[in-house]
Length: 502
Image 1: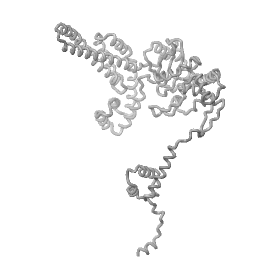
Image 2: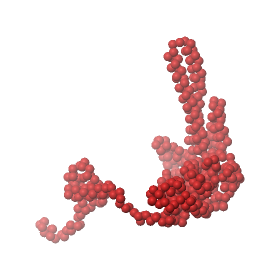
Image 3: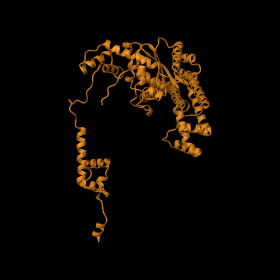
Image 4: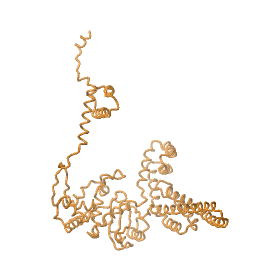
């Protein structure tokens, strides 16, 4: 009966592939690693995978050979690739050593002699190569369209006592101003900013510290563009005040404890009387220093986390809170005038500039409420939730309440609010970062002169980021981020053809 059935029904072996044949590459790899690890018997592994022990050993041998090949060191004298050394390649190498390696002229000459046994290059030759690149860089810098810059950050740094004016786009990180000047007064800043308008720059606002010449120059050149204050400097001044007062309070406490120990150990009544008098004075000082340090610390945290934070109340409430904090500082000013008064005066003088970002955020949130047809107080509540810690339950409780009120529009409103917060800039930290990078190149001025900044500006704007906290910046240059279009390698922009190891 069985034989007759088998004879009448054609059965193809290929129609029933084995478990080994069905295994993908990843499964085979995992099986091989399990065999090599020896943590389980091969018999158990074969049974689990429904394959033979022979198949398991075959996969293990493949993996073992692959690892041997991967970790076997190549001979030190093996030729990896051939490099055609041409005059154009030497020029590119000089530029790369200078801009990427921060190498001096004579250091570059030494590298050629050491690594290539090439001695037909001199300081003058390197200088000519760099100067030719400076001329090309200046033309590229001057031809860049700056109309895409919406928020700029300005600052001043010094190189060997000479001011350098710096301007950076906070969105794309494009350096649109980098200039050696003799003075940093209103006229110099005004002239520099007016020149930028010829390249199409028309930002909505700028951010800068309290430099008088800088602000006066912008007010003269760009009277319709506000210059907001950098909250970083205000927060730093407050933080330094908190640290000073905390250290002073700790010192007073240490003095009190030391006097108490001395008095308790002493057996002479006259010394005990003297120490008690000193102790009373120290305790009085401690009674003033400790509460003052605590109060200033609370005011500082309030200023940083509520008033100057991006996600927070409306600008009108922020101004009220700001004024209250300033008033509290004034009331305590007599307890430490030489440290509290400068901070209080700075905050009081720059209140409107420091809170300029809050007005912009209010406008963005109002636009979101109008566009999505939502009550503005709910949009504001979504903004304030962003200031809470997601690790705390209150964050999720408030978010759940808002989700129930907004319904299907919750996700859209949340994304719009998060985007509005990301587009609200409070600090000029990007220009500070640029300043730190520039200091590594100040050696060039001794070799090239003031024209070195034209080359540096070109390189910083066209060199692609290898890594960044912002995913959208990785693998792109500031010029590409500004224009939204891919651009050639910076060496190609200078007229060279970079070497490709194909």
